[in-house]
Picture 1 (cartoon, rainbow, N blue to C red):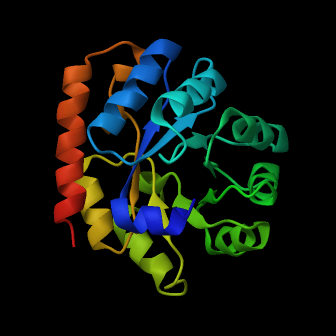
Picture 2: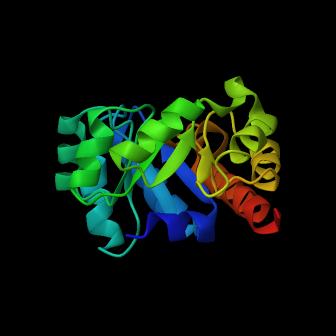
Length: 209
């Protein structure tokens, strides 16, 4: 898949991490029904690889589906086998380089300028600024874009609807959103409430400059 184009087009990456595998799968499918085009399933969730496999079967081969919290080479290989199209990491390591070697675009976790340069060397496609809120929020993103104007930044961590708008205004290519979007749906919570949140976030990313 063309992760760069997808991030630029859709501007929202949903992060699903659940203690209930069946609920996590329902969450993925509900988000897809609501038009959230980019979804990652964190490998720290219950039976995450099984969720990815089942979601891939339900969504078909053309819908983007990512694996998150890819830390190691083994994680990358397992995610690839399960049917993930792209990998998302919280940091830099073997998960980035192995996923890239397997042909999976990688949204690699970075925080500092040095890590940005390292991510490029490892083959990252785009850069996940994590944890964005702790790093200084939209002002920090603006500072990073000074020396790195052509890199694709995706802030993750503490991104609610208001912060999503601010990050996109500050030059983020997209935003990654976990609990402010997913809530408790992946643990068995309300799918109706999930649908409302998905519509609200989609409206934010449509309207942001």
